[in-house]
Image (tube, rainbow, N blue to C red; front, side):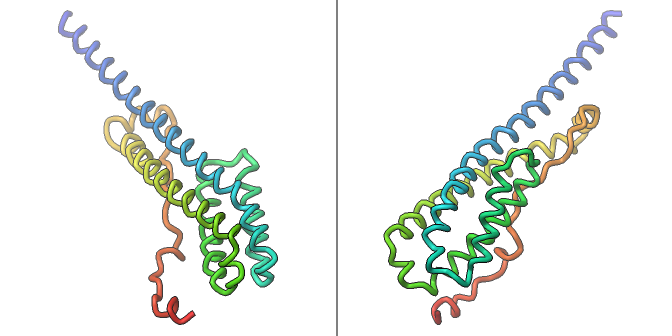
Length: 185
């Protein structure tokens, strides 16, 4: 009888530890996403200033500027899932990269003190976002391991915990940079 009681207490203790471990991992993901969300908000706050600074110079890129504005509005609207935020961030990153490349065609804009300051601020925020993404991806990987690995996957299934997506580099950013073209422009 004593041995059965010890075994039951041991099993309950193990289940509690696994449950607490999963909750800790879930909370770490939420915490990391919150930190990244703060950095993304900084970026979203910079976007109107950046667009305002480049709008008069970049008539040909008006469509891209409009798309960035629409993506920013959607990202700030709330009520979107973490996965949707990840997708929006990837799209905004891609469009902002395109803007920065297009800036090379506008020497007056590149020389503008206001634009230079905005570009520095955006670069700083992008570095902070990159660090936040790494932290988020590490927390998500740890969480996903807990959700998928035995025996915690059993408890995760009972709690309806699902895999989360990590931030990935958009395909366009995976392409090799043609350095020769950069020097020829």
